[in-house]
Image (cartoon, rainbow, N blue to C red; front, side):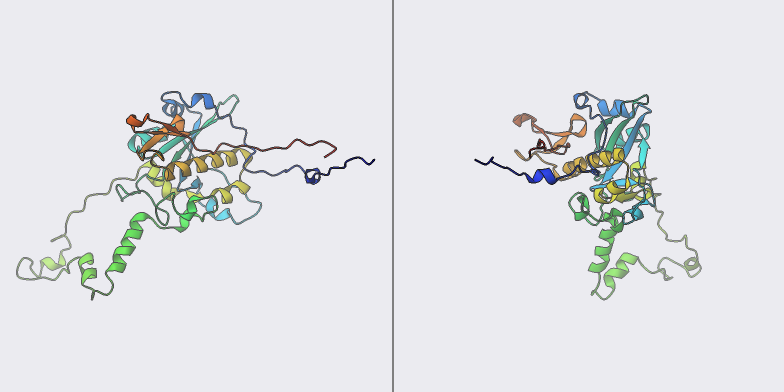
Length: 301
């Protein structure tokens, strides 16, 4: 009687040496997420660094966004001191702060990610910065998306659409946009005044200086996870993985899926809380934390 021989294809598999998204050594410190004022406390510590996300992309130093298509090049995350960002969060409640975790060691470094998808662009009050559309909804908001720096701002896009709408109107609408011509006439402007640029010119208020988070849009390059992870170290690849996936969830789920009420960040950015008190202010969770499915085999498999 022959023995029952069972062969498993798992016996031919080898250890996977390169898993760029699963090599991080950060301590998530899940037990701290419910602490009141945790984000403010962390940002006040000198050992806390902040990474930025925007529309599913992560910030890298200027010039590094062009390295995504090259091999054997290194990239790193652009970071800001926590103290610099603390005041910005008070200014922009639409920014979402997420506590990624800390590292065990003498420095005790903590990492906070801040998503600035909904922060208004400089000079465009009340309009979230856009990379070719509404941030967090276009293709560049996924791990497969294109570089954000290839897009245009929401304000620029609006200007282009307005210009296109004036075509075919005999140039009348275009002239209205450009403003009246400075031709002297006897009604209110003399010939001598026509050569003085200050006559009839409206005084334009000075534009406010862009804030730190607004400047970050143009001062950093923005890349997706697929472009960043192969060029970074294991630690920062893990940070980018958590930051990007979590920020995409926040930008796309803005209302409670049960009652439709608006939601707000909770548990240091790792959850959302429904604002409907009548429905119990339910807590909503994403599924973005790393998980591994394993099968145990031995020499007989």
